[in-house]
Length: 539
Image (tube, rainbow, N blue to C red; front, side):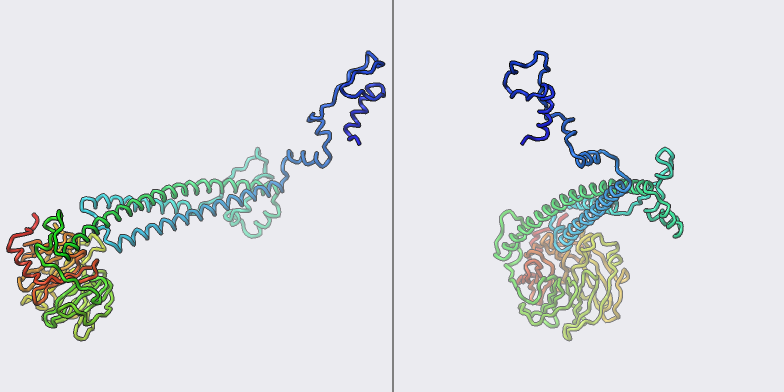
C-alpha cells in the first residue's frame, strides 16, 4: 500500500497530466502526449521545509519549547540547582584542605619522631650541619606557609554582595529584597520579614538567588586559588622531607659502618688499616670483655661503689642494675625516668642518679633500695647560659671527694653539647631536696673543641677527672684546672658511661651494643699511654 506522501505526489502528477497516470520512470512520454504539456519534476524528500510540514503537533510543540525563554519558576529551579552545585564545590574544597593538613601533619610528626628518637644529627659531619640546619629551616618555613594557605582556604568568607537599585534593570519588581542571606534576614524584625515574604515577587527572588550564586562563585575562586597554592607547597614539602630523609639515612649508615668497624677492631684486638691513631684501640687498651644481659636494655651510665665492691649500671629506659665485681647480675629493678648516669657519694655510700629530661638529681639508698630525695637543676643558671639544644642536656655525673666542701666533695656534670662543658656543683646531699642553681656552681670547664660529652668519672688513683666523648671515641684526661692533658682512644660503638673499679679496670657502658665493656688494667694502660706522649691533645 502506498504511503500518504506518495499518494499526494501521484495525485499532483495526475493533475498535471490531465488526470492520466504518469508514465513509469525511465520511459519515454507516450506518443499521444500534448507537445505543450509541462515537464514532470520529481519531488525532493530531503527538503527541510517539507520535513517540518510533516511533523506532528506534539513534535512541533517540543521543537518550539526548546527555543522559548524560561518562565519564572524554571529560572528559580535552575538557579537553585546551580547554587547547590556551588555549595558542593565549597564543601569539596574544605575537604581537600583538611586532607592536605592531615598529610602535612603526618609528615611533620614522622620527621620529628625520627629526629628526636635517633642520633641523626650526631652522625652528621660538622661541616655539613649548617647546610642541614638551613634545609630544616626552609622546611619549617614551607610548613608554616602551607598552614597559612590551609587557613586561607578554610576561613569563612562573606557572601553578601551589595546590589545598587536601578530602574534600567527591571525596576522594583526585579530588585532583590534580601530574604535569603542571614544578615539581610536579621536586618528586619520578625513581622517585617514575614511581610517581605508575603510581598515578594518571583522575579525578585530569582534575582536574589542569581546575586547569591555570583557571590558564592567569587568565594569558590578565592578558596580554590588558596587550595592550589596549598597543594603546590605540599608537593615541595614532600620533596624536602624525602631529601632530608635520604641525607639523614646516608649519614646514619656511614656512621654505623665506621662504628661497626671500630667495634670489630676493639673486640678482635686488631687494627684496621687506614683508621688512624685515634681508632687504634689495641695500641692503648687490651681487648675488652663484653658483658651482656645484665638487666639494663639501653646502658647509659655505670659507676663503681668502693664501699660495697659493686658495679651499678643504669639505662635510658629507667632500669637500675646491681652487679658484682665481675659483672654478674645481683639485682635489677625498674626505677622510672630517663636516667643518663649514676655516681657514688662516697661519704654516705648513697647513689646519685641523673635524669636528663627533668634535669634532676635523685638520691638513692642502695642498701634499702629506696629513693630519698630529689633536686631540680636550673639548667641555664648552672651552665651560665641557656642551652641551645633542648634534647642535648646533662649526660654525665661523677663525685670527687674534697675536704671543706658541703657534702664532702664536688659533683661533676657533663653537658653533652652547645655548650660542651663540665660543671662542678657543691651541695650537701644530707640537706633538704629542692632546687640547684648558680649558687651551687664552683667551676665550669668549657671543652669547646669536643662534642658529645656523654660521661664523666673520677679516677682516684691518678687524681684526675676522665670525660668520655662519644663523637670522637675518646677518653679525655682533665687536669685539676679543667684543661685536657691527654686524649685516649676508647673502644665501643656508642659509649655513654664510664667508671674505674678498685682493680684499675675501666668500665664502658655502650648504648648501641647493649653491653658493658670491661677493659682489664685499663687505668694502667691509660697512664702508660700518657707517659708515652701518645695521642696528644688537639690544639
